[in-house]
Structures are given as structure tokens and as C-alpha cells.
Length: 466
Image (cartoon, rainbow, N blue to C red; front, side, top):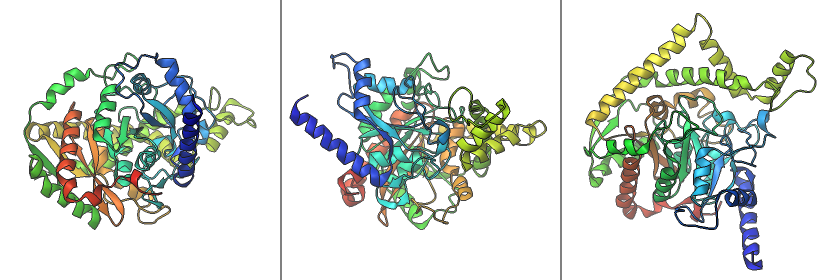
């Protein structure tokens, strides 16, 4: 490496570290470690590497060999991953370089990234406000221009909500589109690896690089079969009814987006989705039950935090979990254990699964008539840290728009639509199985038509000072 290149690299790294001090986006920033990983996977031949020269960040509940894998928890604070997730390996194999691991709500449980046990993440547009969650670190890193794209995870909106809060694109792929191998399990039937980025074209390329069958994850699907479902263009968008409780800013932005959809070739009609009022209780019942089972592996015996004062195996487990898990994680484990108890499964867990099945059928029926669904991502914009505007319970209730796509297992894309009071607002398109390409097309078309009229509302955060 020449002296000039080395000095430029050092200057860039120092710049990122300085911005990260204000943002708290990265838990670990180590481009050199990422370069070593790239060299171990790639030869000197750069052919067929569509992401050559690109850097990206990875949410710290996704494995990257040699990097820490903390899940934002004291339980795994010192754990180093011995392998990489399939999605990471595919991106690195396409020429991209991992530069660091981003902050998150502990084990992906939260809507603000304030639930991280290791760091607080701030919104790049106003550092007094939350970046959203649980992929807040990835959203903040992209919005601030520290990386062109980042990996996140979406269990009930954890990619799309922080994307909306930070003014970037956020994709939740359909369930099975992207391998979950290397993703630390929280709620296995709901979660998946997603993407955040400022450029829709880069997001599309990154998704296509990651997607497809993986022998290490039996839930993955051949995307070549799925794309056929996107070719039957109907040109109709369902507007999700039942939008009570939106803030004035979000409601005004939503109505503005609706008014511009005809300009990109869509007709609209408002619909009422049955069971929408039951999405949140069904989602949290299922997610908590799966969290209770998945997090049972943290006993303090094989890996993770281990209390040296324990005298028996049972005491070791109790003390390690008490010290290693934060309040939100403990709450969800307790809730999940409760709904799985004998005598309560029929009353809670099985009822939630029935609601999920009914919702999936309702969504499938809807997509026989409509091409996409449009809805807000979250009822409000980013809120201040430690604000009583949305307490933890209210934040859970606000997941009704995003968790719908997770329960149904279909793809959804959050896209930035403008600024209100100096903070971004985002909406989402939800599509049927295999419609990721259509989601990209719709979001790109909206921006191409609307941005020239209102360029000031689409200024990327990377063009502004933190």
C-alpha cells in the first residue's frame, strides 16, 4: 500500500470513528479485519463481483468470522464468531468488505436501540432522538454515510422502522428468500436478514447477491421460482385502513404519497385487513414463545457470560442469566415461558397461531386482487430518548403495521418519502411472496417522479453534518 493510500485510509477511519462517537452506530469498527476476511474468500480475480469496492456494516446479531458477536447483550459481550453467516459470505464473495458490527436492541428486542446493554445509538438527523430499532445502528451508519449499505434483521419491523426514522430504504425479504444461517435466533419463524441503504439500485444488487437456496438453512427457497409471481402486473395498490392513532406528520405524509401513486401507474383503493387489531398480541405471543425456547441455550456453561461465584449448575445458570440479560429480554422470556406452559398453550399460543394462519390467508386473498399494499411504517416519527411520548408498551402496540408482513412471511420495503419538522418520514410497500423486484421498482418509480418536485425533502443524511 502506498503512503498516500495509507494516509487516506487512516483519515477515513478517523473520520468514521469521530462520527461514531456522536452516533453510537458501531459496536466494533475494524476495516482491516474485514479486508482479511475478504482476502481469505476472494482471489485476485475481480470478475463477476458486482459489489467490488463496496463496504458494508453488519448488525451485531449476524455472524462475521473474527468479529465479535454480542447481540447488544452483556451475555455475549466478549464472544468472537468462529464463522460467517451465509448472507455475509455471499456479499464478501461478490467483492464487498465488512467494516464493522452495528449496535442493536439486545437480541433484537426493541424499537429504539436504547435497549442495547452496550451502547446508545442516536439518530443522525438529530442526536437527541432515537434511531429506531432494533437495527438502529445499521440505519444510523447508512444515514450518516459511514457505509453505503448495511445488514439488519427484521422480526416485527426491525429493519423498516429504523429505516423510516433515519430516512433510508429498508428491505425485509420474504421468509426463506435469504438464508438465516449465522443469524442468532430470537423468533425463528418470524425473523430474517434484511438490508438498509440510501440507493435502491445497490439494495437490489445486494439482495440478489444474498438470496437463494442454502443447504445450511432448509427454509430457503429458489428465487428463480419466486420471481414468476411478480410478472402479473395489476397496477392496483390496496391502502391499508384502520390507521387511527397516526401523528399529524405521518398522516399528512401518507396522504401525500397516496395522492402521487397514480403518477407511477397505480390505482388505489382502501381496504380493511381482517385481524389487523390482533396482529400485535399474536406477534408478541409467538415471538416471546420462540424467544423463551431459543434463549434457553444461554446457561453460562458452554459460552457467554459465566458467573464465577456459582456453586452448582443451577445456580450458575440463574446468576449468569440474571447478570447477562437486560430487562426487556427477561420480560419476553418470562412471557414466552408463561404462554407455553401446560394449560396456557391452548388459551394463548395456539390462538395466536390461528390468528397468524387467518392473517396469511387474508393477505393471500388480497394479493389476488391487488399488486401491493401501502401503509405507514410506524404511527409516529423518531421520538426523543427517554421520552414519555412512547413508553415500551406503546412502542409494542405501534408495531401493528410492520409485524403484519412478518406474520404473513411476505416481503416489505420501507422507503423515505420526505421530511417533517426536520426528521424523516417513511412509508412501506408490502407485496406477495417473491415480489422483492416489484417492491424495488415501485419505490424507485415513486422517488424518480416525486423527488424533482421536492428535492429539498430527499437530501441524503450523508450530505449533511452530524
